[in-house]
Length: 440
Image (cartoon, rainbow, N blue to C red; front, top):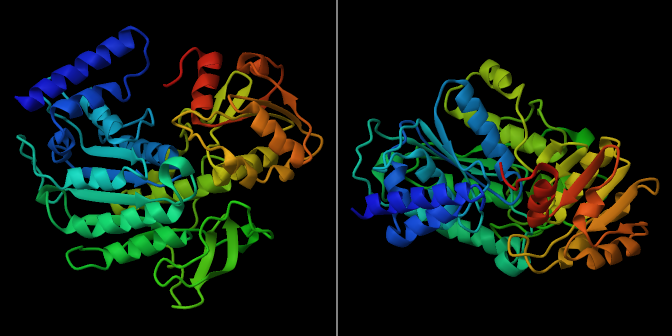
């Protein structure tokens, strides 16, 4: 009864939200349903015929999850996916409600969900609970946890990356018990991120898990950077606290690493070479993660390649609207990678938009760790957003001339192709102005 009421209320709220143009109903239905049935997520979990794939990390969640969904659907498999990017528990529940019938029954092969890095332990705890009146038709459904990376993001909300890493480390040992329908667990981790690689290895080496962690990473010394980013986030070993050294770094703390004290080192990647459908080094990692997931569940390399040929980026992630190309840039590492990518693409016109709303984080001091100095003098730079003056000041110290716009619509009114690098809430505003709607 509690489940039925939660589903009913969630669907009604979703209908009203869309009807009145309040948005895509990405979180409100789930939030309401959780108030009535706090464990509704576990009611959905064991209904998927094949299994569940969770994608967690600071950067790349939306793109990677979207790639995985694209590959699965190309094989004729049905997928429930939080495509809006709403990646807290309420967003995941909303996605499930949207695909469930009025009785709460989901008819799908896979659940593919991007998960906010701070919410991953909460989601994992819910998936342990056996709380479904529906019987799964398949025993031992696959449960794949993809660990992309950990970078500084919203310091006022999350704290430093070590805080998130410790939360994950505490959550993973508790995966041994609980919902028997969704085991065994398979970790897929970024070998080139020392924090993530250590967590994957530590979690998968415990008794009770049937497979070791699988790793993706690059083996391309030509891409090593000569100078270390200001945004480098992890320089100490999570295993022993010793200082990390690198044979080479790709960006931030991502690279071929080893500990000078305990001798722990970067695992050998199971996949390291695959052509990405999107530009940018960071998208190479997203692609490798999606490919390794597909390989793990038995999809051939030929079919994976065919599936990704026509892959379109998720909203706000290299999205092309009119004469604008939008590159979501919400933290130092992400901003640096966006800048490098658009400059490699030959961009001569940039619009940088900085907001400080709840989805962005109130603390904008992170902009001082962005390498704006890489912007050539011949590139036209406009700035806007709630914290436009903070951004303009940072760029002044970088020696970059800017044109300041307090009104975002004025900043977007330009001719010729240009690249927009906005924070999250700013990206939604940009899409609203350019497309007439914020999400999807």
